[in-house]
Amino acid sequence: MTTDDKERDFGDFSSLPYGGLMVPELFNNTGNAGDGYPGLQAAIRNWTKYWLSGGTIDHDVDLNSNDITGAQTISSVSGNYDYLEAVSGNYDYLEATKIDTTYYCSTRAEIVSAISDIGAGFGKIILNSGTIDITSVVTINIQGSIIIEGFGDLTVINCLQDDSLAAAFSINGAESFVMRNLKFDCTNFTDNWSPVYVPGENDSGILIDNITVEGGGSIGVGVYFIGDNVIVSNSKFENLYIGICGLQVISVYPSYFKIIGNNCLNNTKGIVINGRNGMVSTNSTASNTYGIEILGGYCNTIVNNVCRSNQQGIRFAVNNGVYPQQNTVQGNICRENTLYGIYLSDTFDNSICGNICNENNENNASDGGGIYLGSNSDSNVINNNICRYNQNAGAGTGYGINISNSNCGDNTLIGNIALSNDTNYNDGGTSTFDTDGGGQGLNNIA
Image (cartoon, rainbow, N blue to C red; front, side, top):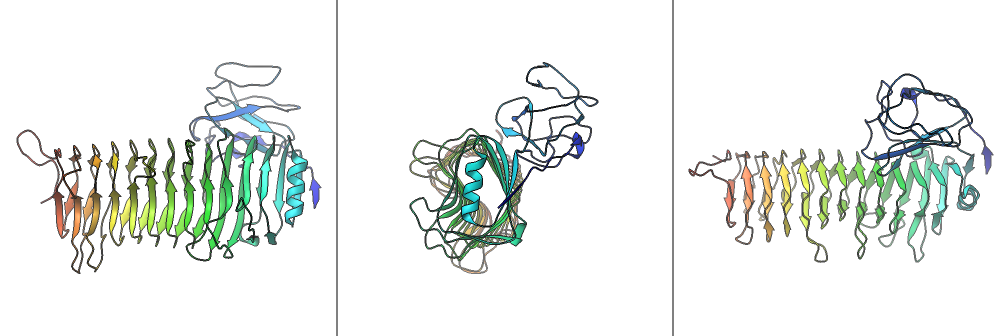
């Protein structure tokens, strides 16, 4: 292991690289703040020199001994700092933190030593090209900030662990944590262990970006988090039990999480969430049993995903007595799934709007189609969806929209298009609102 104090001058904010927990478009091209994820924290600290000029930022700026409050101008910063970080949370100011030391590691022992050495500081661990065997869990539980990164598919983490924590990296605590540009080989898993695990509650920002996790087939969980403020982005998960899982344990719900731009292929379940105030956006799921599964949880946004060639594209279901509610499913493309594009069961007060659910169901004896409302699916709003060409060449029926039975009550359907299906619309529910006061239909289901 070698160390190196890498430092440089940032120059203009618009050209800053990603670092710490900075996210794309935190600053737009004019240097203004506000284009990043809502509620990002930043704080300027540990600086030896700085200046502010040009641009505008409509937030408080903390300069340690020289606090400035109100709208200020920021466009260029000078100083020997390698990374600008932004930590998730409901805060208002920018944080630039000096990387104390950079470590180059090729073994598990060197990684553990580097984490211990960073402690309460801010360090970066670069995992060299080649294969690194992980035979027992690497635990991150420090007061400082840490970046662990590799060289993409050239840095392979061989997950061989078999211990009580059943994880390669367990992120128990840090001021902020970033893992990126790594490949995990999980083909040796014999149980649903996880290469990246975030246990319990945490208020820190955690970013998992551009990793690849490959399993041996229906075993293992790519990223498993229980804590808050986790971002999983631009990563690939293949041949696992679950690609990405944000799941409640007892009374602890993951919240304020973001699952963005990932690719989940050939898993039993692509993405599973049971949290609150999370976002699942612009992901691609294909050839999974369930593309995206909402197991309980509330106030989540499922938007602009592509769920194709799964058994069910997007699925709602109860989990340990917790019913999914007040979630928004919007702008998704769910097509060519073998059963249903969007499937709701035991859920209420959700908004399903503006989705395209075409060409679902196949040549078999099972019914399927575009959108399905099953038992105890109440008070949902189904608006402005397109459900076409859901057809079954076998004994089953391809429905455009199917409200299956009488214990689905008080659902609202407005502005949907359901055409060229085996059966365009079936309303077996109770008190469905789908016509105006004069009996005129509010959907195009001819």
